Amino acid sequence: MPWIKTLHIVFVAAWFAGLFYLPRIYVNLASQSEPAVQTVLLGMARRLFRFTTILAVVAVVFGLVLYVGYRIGTGPGNGWMHAKLFFVLLIIGYHHACGVMLRKFEQGRNTRSHKFYRWFNEIPVLFLFIVVALVVVKPF
Image (cartoon, rainbow, N blue to C red):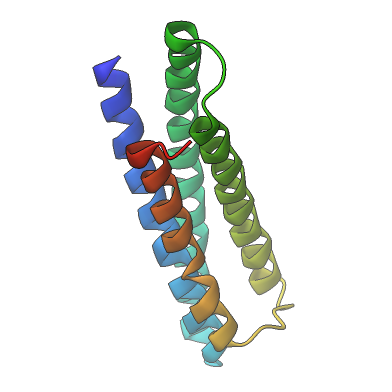
């Protein structure tokens, strides 16, 4: 299991790198009116979202393997794990929201300001802190 845990942590870190950067591209897209620059930024966002999705799937698969092993090894219960899984679902929802926003940018239907995306960009930091704290501290 140590190798699975290692791979899970590495893929989660890579997934979050994408979640940290993608909204930064959206900040630039929302404040940029030059068509050539918008085209470049959209291409970057598309490729990053695609790659980040692959990283997310692999991270979740390794997490599920760990969860099954955890459940077999210690039995049911442990509120921290349930809380962590809740926040993992929120992170997956955030990832999905990034995809929805990308499609709106591609269709020219973005209605949000660059300030919104600056704040939106802070959400994964909060999620990451909460999940790491739950795993390390195991408060309940």
